[in-house]
Amino acid sequence: MNNTQLRKWTVNTFDPQNVLYLIGDVNYSYVHLRNGEVVLSARTLKWFAHLWPSFVRVHKHALVNLDYVQHIRLAPNLRAPSYLIMQNKTSLPISRRRVVSVVEQLDQLGSPTSQSSFHSSQSGMHRTGL
Image (cartoon, rainbow, N blue to C red; front, side, top):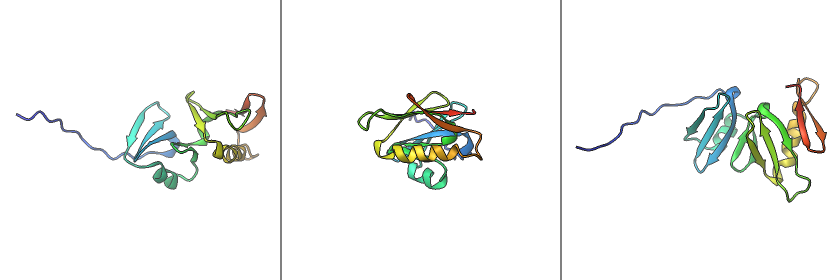
């Protein structure tokens, strides 16, 4: 008798408000949700970036919902890495060529219409009003 295992395939739809960030792995994405669940999707980061334009590509392998960034740790120089610290305490690297763009987009979240803002300090930029 053949010992095969049947798997039920499901189609996952995600509410972007429940997604903290995505990590790409070749042609798959690991979707990290607010409730701590991680779901493997057979979609690429490029596909999700097109679907959710408010998400920001911070690295070749990471797409982030900026609403869930707790703070940013900026490197003292261009050789050292900068990081985003998410609300779930995950640290995600920011590629050197994307740091300026990420900081600008975080600053836009700190506009007068937003309850949250970012301010600069010696240890990096921190989100206030959470």
